[in-house]
Every structure is written in structure tokens, then in C-alpha cells.
Amino acid sequence: MKITLIGVLLLMATMLGSLAEVLRLSAVVEANGEGIERMICKAQDGIPARTFFVKKETIAGDRDVETAKVVPGGDGVISVLLTEEGGRKMAKVTAAMRRGVDRIAIILDGELIMAPVVQALLVRNFVISVGGDQDLGELDNLARRISGRPLRSEGEEPTLPKKVVVETVPFTEEEYQERKAKREEIGVYFLERIPSEKELNKRLRIGMSYQDVVDHYGRAFGTPREPAAEQFELVYVIAPEKASINLKRELVPIGFRVYFEEGLVTRWKQSCDFMWREEKLVNPQSPEQPKPGPRLLYAEFPEFDTTSGGSAIFEFVEKIKIPDPEQKLTKQDLLDLLAIVNSVVQSKPRSEEVEKPSLLTSCDLMKMLAFNFPEVREVIQKAVDGRVVLKDLEESLSEYSSGKKPLAIE
Image 1 (cartoon, rainbow, N blue to C red):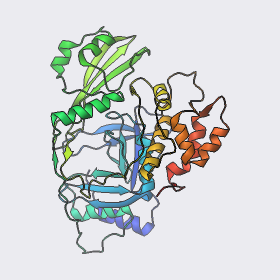
Image 2 (cartoon, rainbow, N blue to C red; image 1 turned 120 degrees about the vertical axis):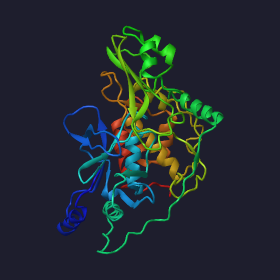
Image 3 (cartoon, rainbow, N blue to C red; image 1 turned 90 degrees about the horizontal axis):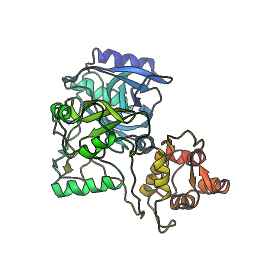
Image 4 (cartoon, one colour; image 1 turned 90 degrees about the vertical axis):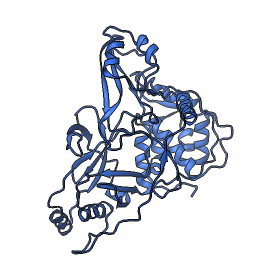
């Protein structure tokens, strides 16, 4: 992104007291429709221009920003830290997003700057890359605008924060296998190697069955276990620890998709995105890598297949075993519980027969929620046939999720 005449624009924005948000984060969807806008992410740093459909609804914006600073030596990168409330908003949305598939749009002054794929639960920290050709002064003023700080006076040199070197090293094979095993326990599957287009064309063929593809390539990242829809697709994505290093953050192959109609392959294609290898931090206590608060919650999670549709989440949650629903918790534990509820609320079952998705009041998660949130106890008292409607549960916890009401544990 090239920002021209930014000094004049910033001055005008300041003088006019513009109410338009500088920063806006919104979800990207697959098709246009009501409440959706078509936006073009301009070409930059060798990455071609691309069109996205973006929700007009804001996940987080200027008022949710705690700090925004230029990253020293970051080639046009601004590091943003959201407020705790902003972080809760971000966590609520990204908890329900498909890892390696769904995207978040990062918009500055109404222009789509980037739309990165969500690889993990996002909370408070993220970075914005506006291109390496930016003047340092312009970049610093942009960071100031995002965080609501006054602009530099004329002639004032920008001051950069002390550069923090974040060192990483590749995960060992043993560490990778441990991470892989934990992912597969909850039904998350990745490729260890990306087949080339030549290999795909040699292996796959039109008319091949779903089971034939799975027998060769294994479980996919985003698919039903036993697809029943007339049209569906298998989404295969490389494991984050096995991805390319991609130092230039270029558009690179990350996997492939196989398309089906009536259970048979109709076509396939290689997938590309801006993905790079995930590595282990050498200095995990770096200020650039804030750690979440302590956790005390003890729970046993059942096996869960994230690819088998939204309805599987309800069964998964109801089978979570919590030996002591009245155990001592930390603030981070309560935030984790809210994230679980938000994930369930935003996961809609495929069956149209389920008009009002609900949870058993007798499941351990509901017992723990009831012990820690009086509003949940009230909802349970109004339950019908021993089940709480998810919409009612969401409304009872909405003020905690949005930060309007403080958590009982600080």
C-alpha cells in the first residue's frame, strides 16, 4: 500500500474531527450479500491484487486499540495491542473460525490492507503490514492515529520503541509429533507434505470416490467425516510446523482442495496463501509475545471431529468431564469458558430440523457455568425438558463476553 499526501490527509482528519474509524477488523466471507461489501486488496511487495467479500460489521476498531507502534526494522509493519475488551471480541469471533481457512480483513481508512488466514485463536496482539516503502514519519503518524495519540508536531522526529529480537527455532520431530497427536485428539488434521500439481494430477481422477481420496491422503482439514451433501469439498492444508519458511511472506502453496458432486470427484486444485512456518520461541517471555494468564481448570475433553459439521460441537461440549464443577478458577479460566460458549453459539448444526440448538443442563460445563455466573443459574431455572437454548445462554453471558460486566475473578 502506498500512502500519498498522507500528511495533508492526517491534518484534514484532525481539523475536521472526522468520526470515521482509522482501523477496522471484519470477517471475510465467501460470497457477496446483505451486509457484505466487495473490497480489493491492492498488490504490494510482489503479491498480486485480490478481491474479497467483507462483512460491514466491525469485530474491533479504533476504540478497542490500547497501543499501536511501528515495529523497528519491520519494513512497514505496525504492531497493535487491543484492550482487554477488544481482545475478548477478537477471541469470540476467531474461536468459531476454521483454522487455515477463514480470514480477517484489516482495513485502514476504508482501504483493505490485508486479509490474513486465521491460524489460531486471536486475542489482543496482531500486526499490520502497509508495505516497506513507507516514510518512517508517515508510518509513525499512522500508528498514532490508530491508537488515538496526537500526531507529531512539525519537524519532530519519530521515536521508535526499542527493538526486541524474537528468536525462533524449528520444532523437533518429537515436539511436532506431540503437537500433531494433540490436534488429532480433537479432530484437527494437517498434511505433512504438499503434493505438487503433477503429483495431484497423477493420483487423482474424475469419478474417484470420497473414500479413495481419504485412503490415500488421510483425513482432511475441513470436511465431514461421512459427507451427505450432494456437493462438498475436501480441504487439505499443510501443518504449520511443516510449512515453508517464506521469509518474504509471499503467496505460496499451502495444500489443495478436492471437489465432489454426489460423492464423486469432479475437479481439484492446489491452494495458495500467505502462510509461513510456525516455530518455537527461544525467548517466550519477550514483551512482543505476551503469555496468557495462569490456568487452574481441570477438565477431560472427549475426542472431537471438527470436520463433521456444527452439530458435533454440541455433543462434544456435553461430554466434557469436569470432576469438580466448583473447583477454584482463574480469570483466564473464565475467559476460556466464555470462549467455549461463544464457539458453540456460532456453530450452527447442518440439519434444518434443529430450530433451537440447546445444551443439557446436567452436563458438567453447564454446572461449572452455573456455579460461576448467577445469570446462567437463572437461565437453567427456566429450562424446558432439561435443556438450555443456546440463544438464551448467549444472552445471559453477553455482557461478560463484551466486557461490559467484570468477571468475578480479577
